[in-house]
Length: 329
Image 1 (tube, one colour):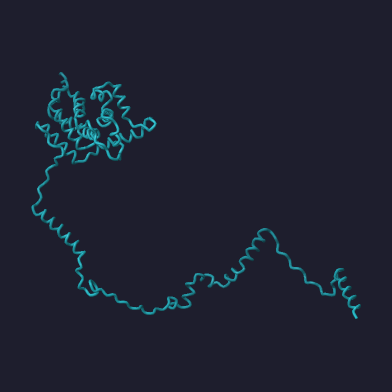
Image 2 (image 1 turned 180 degrees about the vertical axis):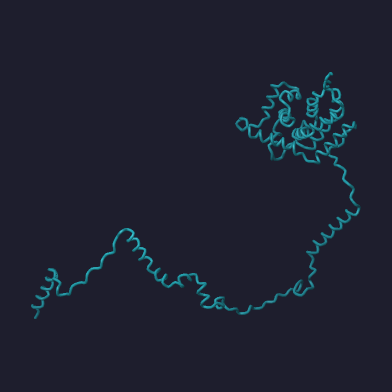
């Protein structure tokens, strides 16, 4: 029993449709970043699909990727990039590159091709492609490579591929199906999916509601209450003195005033208040006791006056006084 060989020729429109579905997301992001505009990129992608369809039948399937990416990069819409006013993402800095280095980088990251495949798409040698890719990689101001910026750009490109808006995917899918059916001109990518017909009464109702909202807003600025007494042209302001009110303290008794006193805790504890008056003395006494100093003993009672021996000084003063007394007439 012979084993059937797998042919490298396309097996018909299903194989071509599967191939185009597989490269549709990557092609859309590559064209968008190469052109700097999503609408221009999608138009270039649809035109590349239209040119690729008649050539796919005469090429081996192994040659499809190289030919498809070559046709996409040859689109005139991708030769001039739309400048970004303010760079927000890392991918916005791609506009600083030339068309060649930018295409070399996108073939590697967005299309997912190897260096040999990308060089074949651009029609250059591998050494020339590596040089162009090296120029496209982010660098610091001093010329050193910036691996963090490169990783950030790579993640943003992959995230764009995975998160294309659904309406954009629907437009690209519709245009691809039109091309595969063999129409001469591809459907415009910007053509939206036909919406369901809405009732005829919906628009008049919406306009009526809008008119009512405008009238209601205008009515708030009109003097419609001018005939109300006290409002409008004859405005009056009645001034009446307020009745004499008692002071707030008069509404409380003595007990309530004492309870609300800020020193109520001391007032309710007379012994504690008396102890607080001698707080400095008690603090000094506690410090002396803590230092081991004993309190001084009071001196004994002094003896009576006749028992005290007079000092020489005092005796001399007394003798002089007596002599002066005797000499007096």
